[in-house]
Length: 142
Image (tube, rainbow, N blue to C red):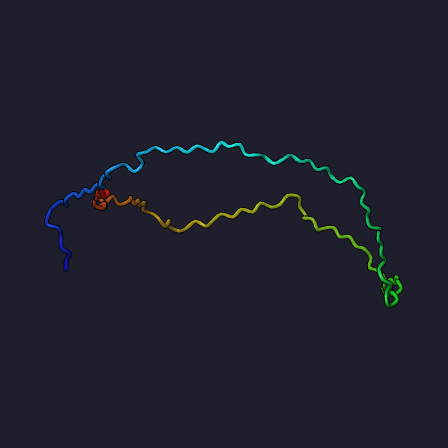
């Protein structure tokens, strides 16, 4: 079932304005000034740091408590020497190539028997008119 459509081709313009008040809300101008009253300030007092000598506590040095069991004796024991003779140090030079300049390796791709694209083709974009949406102008409500 289709919705009912208005009978007129163009809708009627409804305008509503707010009612004007009888008297303006702020007819009397009011100004407020800050209070300029002398407020007494507190009396100025100067306090000096204490100069009297204060006795410091005596320095206390405490030694750690004696161990309950005797500490083990320190010993320096080297590991046993190997039973075989040490290996002789060897120095091996890297193998150098037998010629001074390397060989130039050139490898060209194989030529195909027939070219794959014998015919030249060009594709141009479609220039078809695409319909644009209908332009609708809507005024804001008043």
